Length: 567
Image (cartoon, rainbow, N blue to C red; front, side, top):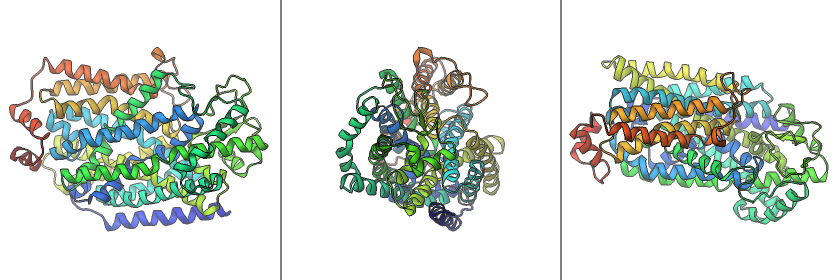
């Protein structure tokens, strides 16, 4: 066992032991604890759990890789703007009102606000969004295990499945929440320490957000010398329309993600939900302001190594190539052999070397020449990011099946013990399905996650906004809008995604050149149009529901809201 394997094993085993212990101590025996942690999580802890739940493997593992390698730095910032802007939108526009409404899940809100038909449609949408999203997390787990512990990807995914299943099934939302507090601590330390160290090494400034500016000029010069397009120019390799659509899809998709929304139900009160949102924004900003610096430092080191000799001379290159995440003819220097400046590390035949987006953050300590303990710490951080989000997504599936289908539709007289049994069985099935998708993912982690955000934007965002701010939005309108958004968006993904990604994708040309990762915005607008149009001609909500919708938007806990929350 080499030093990197040893340190990775120490950090991974140590952190997994902590997660399991916390889940055991936090185990629950009632549905309130399983679904929303009893609504008693302090705001700072809830903020850390929200941040860990929200910052998935895509944020930790893939985002810096996209910024550095997918076209240029400017184009990759769509992920930064979309994901952070969407969180602010969720925290300010939706979360406090949903918390005041007082239900367990997004389908629960839909069922109470509209009707049982809309609830069932929302359950289907929640499961589709969550399964799509969790695929990217399990794929990220496989990447970490295959490279750092030299374990087969399938075995790595199975290990991740087992850990998530144990602490999610045992502790429910309460166990997941406190485990995610630990996971956030691990992932942020693992992300910041290498960034500080590489910044100090390259620029003499230990704060990466400041040191970042010192190398941009040199990075631009390297790009030009090797024939690449500018790292800082706008819209290189991407149309203005697709950049807008991707940013908007990620933003509105974030505000429609059921596993993030349910986090605000774990707060003690509406005020605590708002404070939790502020804490979460601070915790998220620590990583998101650092990601562009990690991207720039890593690309600077990669291009510098290529300029000095060949990448094949680098120890990190050989190890990542051995697991199939770097491909190329001979591992030679990176050059623009076509001379057209249009380089795409992920797929252009013009490149001698193709570097997978998912490896950049995980490889950055090795690329920067940092010692083995930091490499092992980053591996543990990547696993923490993937597992924290995976557990939240699996709980959404579990609670949707147990609370919204079993308890509300199939067996309303079910006891809490019976509901918990169904919830745990549903979670077990979801873990197995997520593991299969993680072993056979239809793309790299951030790409798969972007599709999940597309589904979130096209299904949930419109009916949540209209459900809160338009008291005459009807059940028929909401159900129709969700179905149209889901079906049209799914059909476009199937039509356009590459056929080699999965057997059911067709790989056809995009309509009007709209990239599939940005199509969720189109699905969302269709959802809005259909929901509003159908609501004009269908039965309006009851007078009591319209009054309740009015009241949840105002401060204070009125008698009507209090009575509804207790039902």
